[in-house]
Image (cartoon, rainbow, N blue to C red; front, side, top):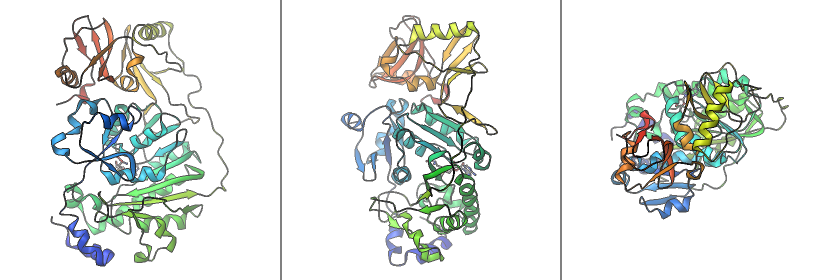
Length: 457
Ligand SMILES: C[S@@+](CC[C@H](N)C(=O)[O-])C[C@H]1O[C@@H](n2cnc3c(N)ncnc32)[C@H](O)[C@@H]1O
């Protein structure tokens, strides 16, 4: 592998005796990982399915190395389309384990796309509390939205804005915040050829300015006593220890905490850049010491002294349906589902269950809030793909349950009309009992409503 000479010189200075082992790690094939979506299936039921050759990842209970990734192609399996798992590089599972979100927590993921860590956080929340996921990139935020929907997450708010614009909405609000910062990606050189070709020592400095900006604008959103994880996938001292050292000096209400367990991680290296000694509490994942890419993780806490903000309710009373619209929606529920959805709101002709959050969000670009149930079109209600992903098979009156081994499951996921016996009207399509979308039946055939942009190719 052709690594930039300047990069190698810097790494030699950092690693000294370990430098040769570090270089050898570039000759070993990339490790691949998969993380189970415990919103939909528990770990042991997934293992019992015996789908893939899996080996546990020591730092993530729901994470597995995939030994035969290329042959098994997990992204092509129908269960991927049912949202049963996320394909994720193993080291990338560490930051959320360190953040340790608990059901009921209010969590912010400020640089979230494409959503690897957001989906991990949401699975830990078990739909209790709230996950606000933001990304500044309009393109990448769409991938984030897809993954949130695929996972069947019910308690998310997706934003597409700068931390500076977001911060006034959430003063002292979140229990936990993740800043998985944009970085030079040196830890991913093996799999990300663009990170390698873009690398320039000058970019490390530029990126550290951006990281400091994100940290500064995010800090006020953490509540007193709350915890913040800063992570990168780079080795650069200035982007890691340097950024955290700067932040703790500028924001003395924060302190760095020890990271318990995770014995395969190594201490931060403040001495190499003259940073404060306590920065050695930060952690590095080195590719020559663990099975995974290079990462950096810092666990910070806001001290308990700051006064709490007064919460305001969000969505005061937006029940703006006409009586005709309400009867169309009610009829849909009566015909189709065994569940009744309360607290619905309408924005234009789209119907949502907003996430329960005691804040008014204004002045930011909101991509979605809670569950998008579907759309009112003339005198019909068309249920959404996201809604199907949040349901269980037992929630629907009309179900067509297809085996993952049946060619019809692939036909459905490719968007084709399928010829299977059904009940007239909306049917929830399931694969081996896991919902994956809607189809409208006439008794013999099913018109496919699987989200066009999600179709299998
Ligand atoms: C390392 S990636 C995040 C990966 C993501 N956490 C995951 O696990 O899938 C960094 C992200 O930061 C976003 N970003 C860059 N500058 C940003 C800013 N100022 N505010 C918020 N997000 C930003 C990028 O668009 C990129 O998606």
